[in-house]
Image (tube, rainbow, N blue to C red; front, side, top):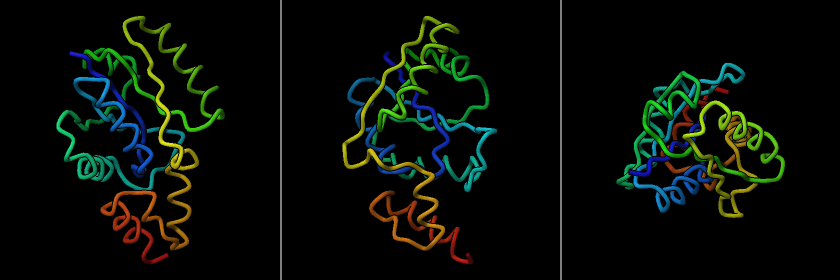
Length: 160
């Protein structure tokens, strides 16, 4: 079975993330969307909220699983017997960091391949940080995230 791991903080999941997941399921028998904690980031949503939001966003995709991890990505992927790590590239600014990480991961294990996928061009400017910032000022992010996530963002920032 070809298993791909799509790791990230997904704080929150965006339509760009979903686009990458949809592209991934065309290439892999199964895709695990793996939510991680990132000590360098202060998430708006806790890990359980993020998992719940992702599950509601991918519920119609039969070969997608949502999980979390707090280990080195390579260790997690090997434990799951994955064949690939999936990363989205929005712009050339993403490439340098992602390329470096892919090379480090290859040094840590040559059993994993990193697959770079580009989202639809309408999502190339989109990331979770921008979505949170717009939402924090009560801007409409409905076109950037699934409707359930939009509701959660409105609720989160209701008293701001």
